[in-house]
Length: 290
Picture 1 (cartoon, rainbow, N blue to C red):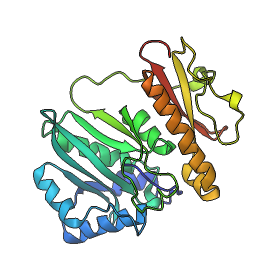
Picture 2: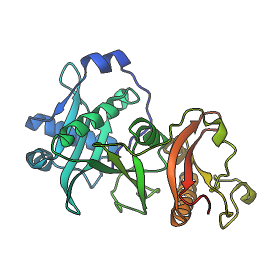
Picture 3: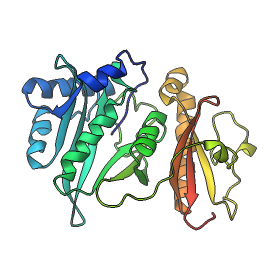
């Protein structure tokens, strides 16, 4: 449930982030309670999946991470929580939650929290960190794919079910599962760079209201090595303005990702087109065609 956040403008300066914010483990009962409060501020008062103080604390004894970003006055601005365990005989880490207060977003706090988490679990011998994020949230796609260099390994429909969160109401909880390789040689990834060459690639899914001919014909034409899947730049704003339109985005992207993944395509990049108010995932076929 990582990186879910409502849009907000930042009121803190970048200088404050770099000079006055400390990233460290949560320690006191007050800090654990502040973490729970931040969970509710992020996902809503009725959010049913809040991690309680006891789990936030005890997980750290077993290789888990519960770390916060604190300002100069000791106020919790953001946190990351994850668990370490064994998968198929190897030590792995699952980053379960990341949240940053509205006034501290878009200033690199989330990235600093993830890097702190990486350093802690890498020292334990962990080689890969997994987490999930909503493919419809452009800011999270940019952080995860472009900034951190994760790889999308799975698309899961309604991964968390009904969480009673206002952020999830009407959209469900479809998620990408990503892998962040933190030890050894890093898998190759495509930098977004200048996306001008990507803009001529076919777009697999329709945006709400687009005519049918705007999408790739069904099935994918043989030889289509690369294609795009579009999302809105701000799904939260879309949801506020038109819940029905937001639901259409979920339906169209779900179908497109499942359809393309089944045919051997994988996410290889992401870029923003501010003029079009769209984000675009680049998908590449492992076999050079559909």
